Image (cartoon, rainbow, N blue to C red; front, top):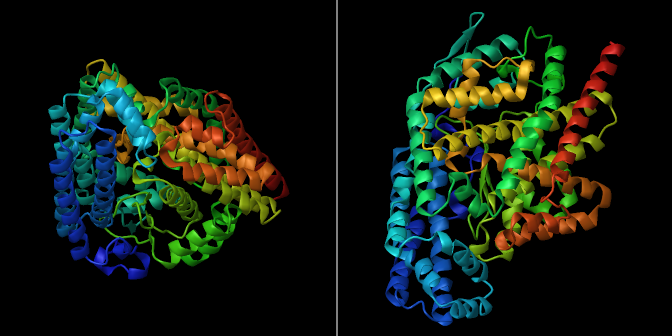
Length: 602
């Protein structure tokens, strides 16, 4: 069955953007307000940021400009994300991007002038403020990498052009690709990006699953050259900007805003590639055995351990699962979950032109907005719990911090979301002592939480690091190179346990993360923290929960090492990651043991 057009989707399955603005007119009023305040800042403060009073007065007004642009830009962008076929929303979003780029260019003098101020003036400004303190500290931190004021202004004004590769990628993927149906044993099956990634990858019928993978891969392969060209433009731009700012490596430049070391980045990738691979190969062989497959292919890696015991879950039923699963976080947190369902924070709909996967946007001063496509699977419950983790994080953060202090390091930002997946799994494990049920929950932890974050995204990260190393050496990338790098990455991890075809090599085309800096590796970094904190909560209860709530509220006032430390985890060592890998291995071993016991009883 073909996906519906957005206009034909029941409204109750869609999110309600009116909690940002009741109408487009109200949004436009804020756009004009932001532009007037922007102009006022330029007229009042440009050339005058040479006193602590002027610096803080300017930043106080700049915070309001940022708040207004967050709301207006998110309002426009969220409307596009659910329907890339809507030309009106596309143009409105592009208009907002142009206004934002122009405004950021005009206001770039703020950072440049603060950097040029005398140290004693900046120190006084720091001591006179709470809301602007960390912003000022970051300005000073960025000082060694700043360019001439006019260059910075020009780069800010060109932000829409600099971000064009991501827009090109999305347009090719979500607007231009039209998937034909495929046929298995005389039956015709509809195909689309969301249908494949959210449905067919989990299909228990091997013939249908593999045929869907083949048909899906054939279609995206048609776009490999334009997608590679967009990606090459992205990485070459990043390399140029890194060089301009004095970084030896594009990797170092992208890690800089995350406030983590190169060692932490490399360790996350290297240890997982080496230490987790044997466990996951064992899991792949277990799946092959359980399903009686002739061979294990890349198309088979997401099938369930026990498809017959994979209950369908309606949206309404998911509410009870999530409310009870996350109840350990306290009444206020559960109230947020209830509001998410009641007030339509979530876009559940399946429709043509909608973004794939899931995300959570949390505009400062309003509720969060969660995008996913609901397929009545337990995997959807885990995805929703994950995105509600982001919502809970930024609800606490936005309430406690100024808008300047909500840009949490990418290294840490996936910890609260993956934490919720683990809390859900631990709750489910406590609801029954049945062996089959326990095996099912444990397999959900592997196939949903750990596979997604410690395997899928980590392999992306390993591949991405190879791309940046090529770029640092002065090279470029094309479709042939990217296919080769991805295939090598997959083969290195899966060894002889999984057959990696040329179709599997095209996996690099499927993720938008490559246009978001060094984001892919942060999923495993966040889940490492989450695993260890979750174990603390299991062992200590309320004190560990309270520590975690303080972490959520801290926002960007601390770096990842400090945030993890507040939760009782030392991420400057190998121990948390090695312990997490051992924990994953233990789950896989238990799944294997339970499988053997069940087979003996049959």
